[in-house]
Amino acid sequence: MMRILTGAGAAASSTSFRFLPRSVDAFGSTVIAERSPSPGVYWVHAWTVGPDGVITQLREYFNTDLTVTRLAAATKCVWQSRLPDSATNSLPGLVLAI
Image (cartoon, rainbow, N blue to C red):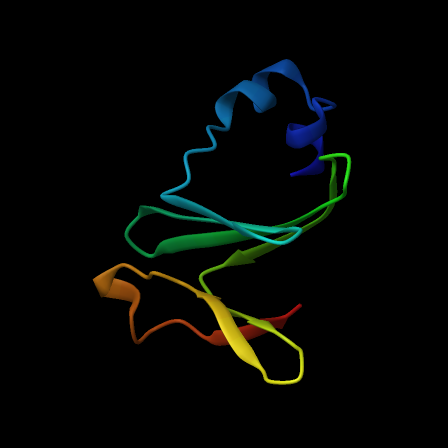
């Protein structure tokens, strides 16, 4: 993924990837994008963006039901995967604490 995002990959491989998320949500310095391009395939990207707008961290989750939770005085869910109906009960769950 780093080669594709930075342009360091070979010309053929960098043009074959099309980033078409189903949804993009942002809260604070965290940006979440998700997509289910075909049955049985589901991914979520979680980016941390610095004050200058540069991505400082990228996490990729494939075929995982992700819940993002903000840790503060009270734990609060701020985002949850919107899985396609076919994947609702078949993916492992993961909590990302920010």
